[in-house]
Image (cartoon, rainbow, N blue to C red; front, side):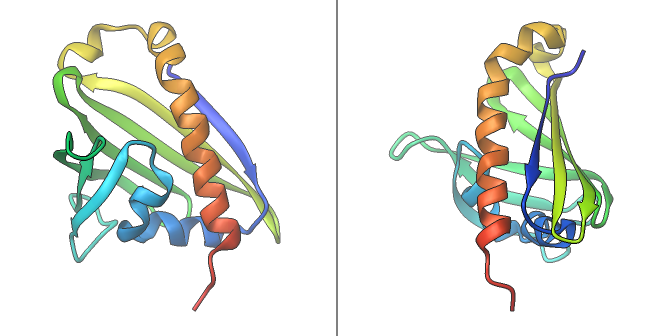
Length: 148
């Protein structure tokens, strides 16, 4: 079983996608990301990357996250590096529920390095609280962001 969390969001799916498609917004909603260094021009195309830092200053590490798969407006699959543990595959899925609400699911599983040997049911207690907070932040940004 892969660790997965979900959240109802009080805005349309397009507003949530706009946040996901704005690489510069990444540290606003991803727990642990603290500083954006660069965003590839074609983000969120497959193979594009976000170049960010993680951790608390002065103990920050430069890192990057890469798009593995994308279905614009509906799904974004990322390969997030996780230092010693290797890396994780993170899938965000947006499900429209009505004209002004949607449901977002976040599934994360260690997929590279030593973390891939840890079963999902063991990973879940460690990453679920962080992912619940990540979806809470994503919802806040999407619900309150001003559209241009």
